[in-house]
Image 1 (cartoon, rainbow, N blue to C red):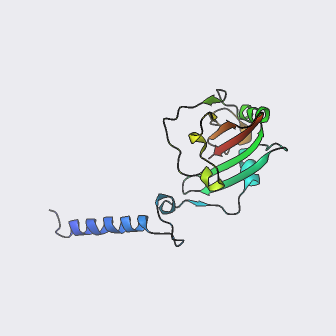
Image 2 (cartoon, rainbow, N blue to C red; image 1 turned 180 degrees about the vertical axis):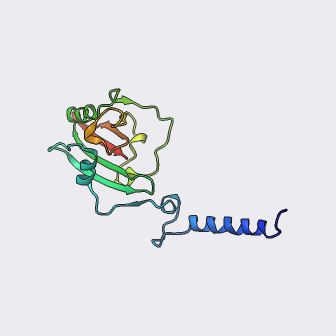
Image 3 (spheres, rainbow, N blue to C red; image 1 turned 30 degrees about the vertical axis):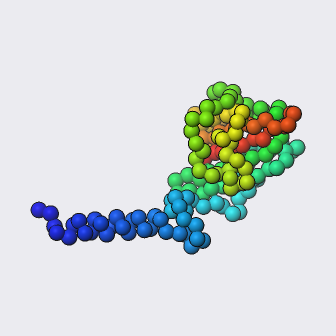
Length: 169
């Protein structure tokens, strides 16, 4: 036997759920990023991100930027800098990816506006950017045991310069 109030209670519960997910978070911003509990760690920068990824930013690197997006399930670490092509290739090789950097088809969209937080375009949208990804624990990279996945994009710039994009969780 179905209670007469059950449909009303279900509708009320659905309305409450929707209103809690679509409201602003006190800063006037709305949308899926805020409703899912994502926020940026204001105290984390390039040094903290490089330490987490166990990546040495080259001494001659310029335009170094980093950020940590805090999420309920897993945090996302972003790092970008400009260095020589040779050093960018060396960083990619140090990740122990099973395949070298290669062009990637543009048949997918970026996962939100992550690098946009750093004032950069999303690397997936760049023509000619090369990509490699690796699961450090799967590659027996004990230096990065806390990192579940790390990917690198390398965008060639002027002669012998490249922008490196690193993303890890």
